[in-house]
Image 1: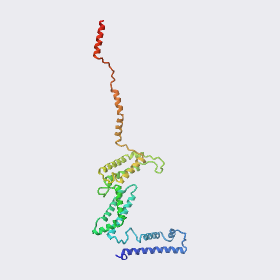
Image 2: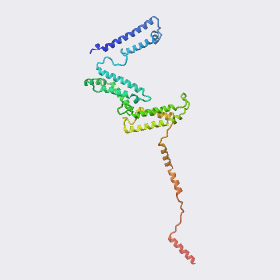
Image 3: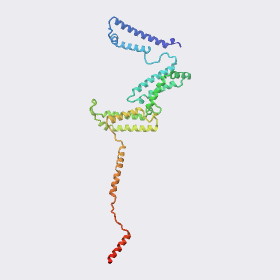
Length: 340
């Protein structure tokens, strides 16, 4: 098809010409103002435009300039009107992938700190994965589909579509988001929802029990109420996190080690830092008392053993036991003495 006969290209060129003409008229109007002495050469461009045009007209000039920089296109993002290597269906697939990738990228950046990647971006990740599948798999005529996939995925050495898809998959795997979702990755798992509910409850308890001035960082704040009233909430959250770790080790759902998803790990790290470092609280573990009792018993066991041995042992005196021969000799000597 001749590019000159393309209706879309013709319309785009006409729109660009019209926009250029309108911008040239504005420039000529500014030049005439300078020639007549209405504006001085020392005035700033923005000041000159502000004196000459209204606020609405200034916005229109900016829109016209941006439109010219974009090739005469107005409105939302779209592909170039003439792409000889792509048929309309393939062009639509590329545009869908571009829009989905932009939405997912924005979601990932917005959820970077505090980490909310898995719980907020999983629908967009599935959407990007589906768009990539639509490009890769055979739809309709196999030869046309193969040509589309080759044009979008293998036509150049950079392969932007492939790089973006691999980046999203790598980020998703490093975050271990599969541990936060159901088997089909369609929604958050029950354990994740319960953990996030306890996490929000614990943070709410922290906020409601804070004491002291919130304006002075030099004043020593009193966090005794936080430690006292939020101990049960923190303990429940910590126990649930430990159970989820054990379950994850048994199921081995994570592909890179035994980590939980990054959302859960980051939430638990935030809670522990607040509890230990900021509030300086501590929770007596249920296993601590038996361990201390056994340790003390083992420590004093030798003392108890030697003390009991000393108290209950009998101190026997040594007794001289004479042999029988010695007794008979002594008796015979006594008899002789008596006879004399």
